[in-house]
Length: 150
Image (cartoon, rainbow, N blue to C red; front, side, top):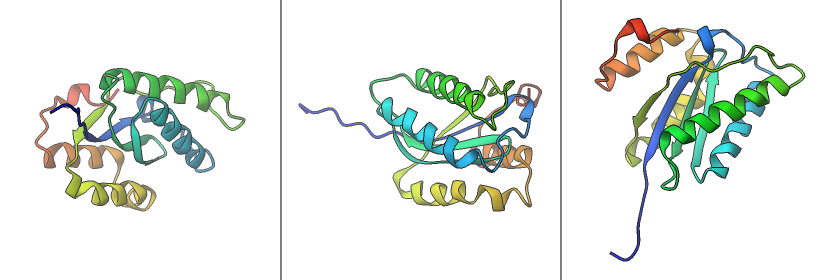
């Protein structure tokens, strides 16, 4: 085949350092848009970005040009700087070191997108810790809970 085709859709999840509720409601929409812009610059197609006060969900198609770890490094670094630069930002803001990344089949993209868009409503009933453990179990991801929370 003379052409290289690449579609790798991913659901990425990570939290603020120590799960601090630093992502206030007035900051979130602009942060989501900023992160989508970072992804676009890295040739990753952002499908949706969302989350709640202490964590983020990204649904995107990963670039074939950049390693996933490099994409995450840049997204976290640049968005962290952005949060600190905002008037209502948090000067001590940091993302946690780790992340969760799950592949998403094309037939499930819309369901995951809707799930991310409803985070605020979802977290009226379920904590981030409960949510993440549920996602990991559902996807049969092995983990050591001692290292899951920083």
